Length: 340
Image 1 (cartoon, rainbow, N blue to C red):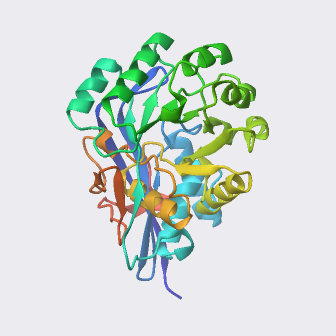
Image 2 (cartoon, one colour):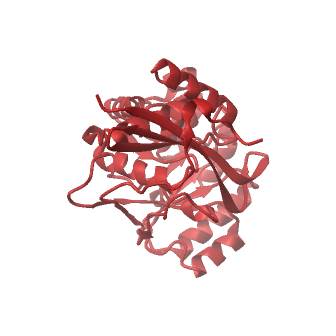
């Protein structure tokens, strides 16, 4: 029988500038790369819970990962389960998840990402940040509604009529505020609005009032919220970040459940490295969710990365023939500790 080893390596990825999540600003992304070797087959997976996005810390994820490795089971923490599953399935080159070598490269669409104000948007547009993209994701709900309105209309004026916006408010608005803002926009130019409301139970009602489709993200991770929004009228999209779900089989199950309920899936990451972006692009291609642009355009936020980022040209990303290989200093999983 071929020998099996699991090793871990610590890494840090600095952001180009402070990245704001909620009320916190984060300068460095910390994580663990898993390397699983089975004979001549080697696979990798990333465990890097993001403060403000994941519920677990990196320390908790590591404890869960090492326990799962010792017990030959799936870790309890979603980010740890995701990373170990990725290492297992890439080592096996599992074609079910599109993780084998590709005979022909394919392409998927990717949305642009913007999180600034109107002035920054004009600078970004002049620098070509939106060139070729068919969809642009904007963060709203952080400023006054009048400023959000000004931002959305400014970008719509800059880009061509074929470009549509995705608006993400991260549950910051009341129904009344969201309705006032969204009803003043050109609904034909908005692809969907992602989790705008403090109260998820009003999401379908907001969609009816403003005639704009809604998307869910945070609601996927709370059973009581999911019960109200899954398959509800005009809630058309689920934004799935695999490391918040768990292992790849669980991710596949969430995509299938959404499809059964008439929902499209947009795959995204939780600001993981370009290795995970390349892996998730394969999932998008193999799991049949490529009809919409995917949320995989975050590599540009980092000053340094684990692997060379996959280029995005004209809003399109090539799904590589083989996954990139992270070059890190690995040690046995049982001996691994986080630096102090």
